[in-house]
Length: 92
Image (cartoon, rainbow, N blue to C red; front, side, top):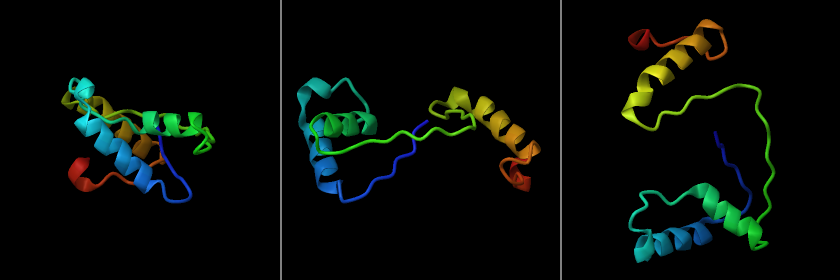
């Protein structure tokens, strides 16, 4: 799981990378411009530095509709353990 934070204003470089992605015919089969790929290129080109911070907790992804039951159970378990606050009544 990724959580990104950065200093400075990378917006112009990110905007240009997205514009390049959209108009590049070789990328037609891809559905996503990956943020990790953008930052990897920035680091490799010496334009940015990256520091990785570890987190002790696990995570679950919710990318496809079939992931919903597993994600829901994961959040319920975190709530039951007191790690995630109270589950809203509508979701209980």
